[in-house]
Length: 215
Image (cartoon, rainbow, N blue to C red; front, side, top):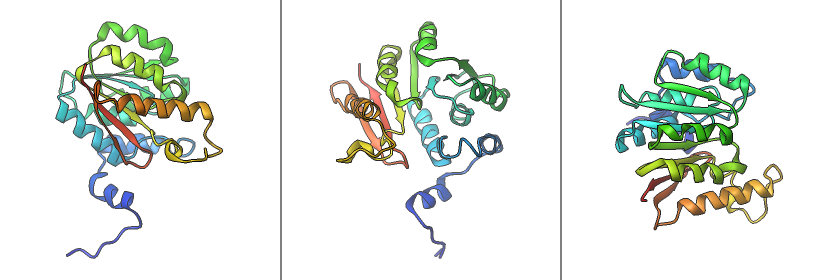
């Protein structure tokens, strides 16, 4: 029996399921410093890969690219003819993501405000999955778009849905604005509707809400 111990549940899970390939490690290293803690963790990337394979996903829209870590990780679970369109508002991050993902032609980086660039992607619909990991105030609007353009039986996934644990706290943490808190609570509530979704909130470090679209 192994005598190895860990300091936390997350550390234990990461040790078992947080394996990264060379490309993932390279992207994570490019994000060190100012972007520490923003990108999804390796075990969360593995969970997305699991869901993609399980649901037979081929076409993904990601809202919030950062440096391309999640896009590259999701692409690794796609079939050869799969595609990811990933949207990034920040020009510097979009440039970094293009550099980090250029070897995978299945990934398309779309630079600009997602609320302005999403309409042009409608021609590629229906999508099999939408992964939302961007500005929290607009989660409801991103969900509006996903409801119209993700197929029945597809996946809609939101990251950071605990919002620094604020969604269940009686008193709002100072770092979280009232508008962001209400937006995230509304987002989670909508995906919990059993008439429209088969959904669940996964207790990752920052919370991840996963829903199968029933309509």
